[in-house]
Image (cartoon, rainbow, N blue to C red; front, side, top):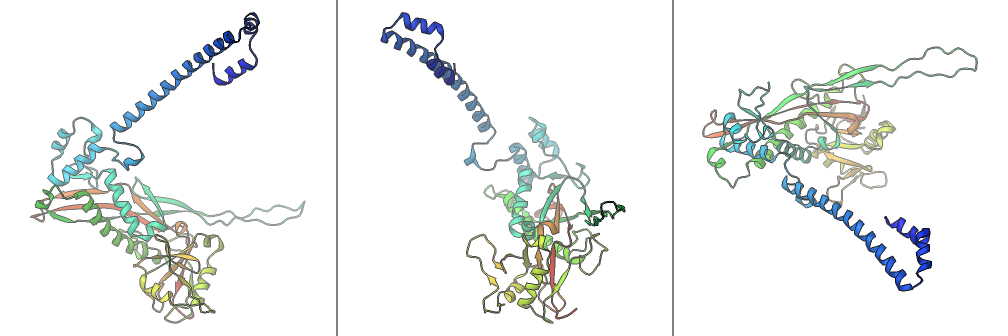
Length: 408
């Protein structure tokens, strides 16, 4: 009997109970009968609560067994045995046969060879998911473009999407007038071809033998630094040959690269410098749908010049951030530093403004591959690390560039 039924029974006792109550009018007997019924109710529900507690305890035991010790436990490896084997490969360079023998308890824990063609004869090994995630996290903290742009991970050789020019035709007609056919939008494919980025850090075998060295973290930091520098240059000015197509390479090409045309530019208002009016013109020449989530991108040298500009009332257009982790603002919009952007000079494009998530796509092919080489550069052991990355413009109208110049 549940709680609702019990209270209902007290308010509306069955005929048999009424008869019993009429037959036995002793209050103590009535109280005893009610107490017995209530104890039976508690016993039934306590049993159910016990079953629930047992199931909960069983789940906690299983989670603890696989290393998920609750919220305070932090991020745990998805496959601890695989990660330990990978670390062993780094330090000792075990052969594939030795690694298989050491991990005969399960196929998922076995390190699989994975060079560019996927064959296991080259001695390459696929980095564990945990290590791969560490590198991407480090890249995000270094490269502002990975923070503001759209990042898509794929398992195939590249990424493609479809561009819609949005040119739907329409018109006004009378009630009985003919309805001629209207124009339809043009759909065109956009293909982002990845290039391969690599790093080849080296360390002595003596250092590898030092158990106190966190080798995995060291390699992740080294590779993240090398990758971020190369990526930033490619995302900004790459020519698309074995590397991403940088967004500056679209300007001045018309519609030869992107079916939607090229990004628009606004003049700075001075032959070889910046003006406050030019920045305001840039903001309000960007389409209104893109301004809501727009932000600035420029290098430190450009920011030094912009931070000195004032409006007509003598107020600085630049507003430094007083909150840790938040970017400074310019004309009310956040500013991000990208040192690969050009410096201020006549004819240059040093500043960009717009909705970066709609403007540029970064395509990561899942997986970072590592080849341990103890022979080529003795006494050093090198770790040839590769990753496939692509990039290109998705919507050319989402960002607008400031071109230094007084007139076209």
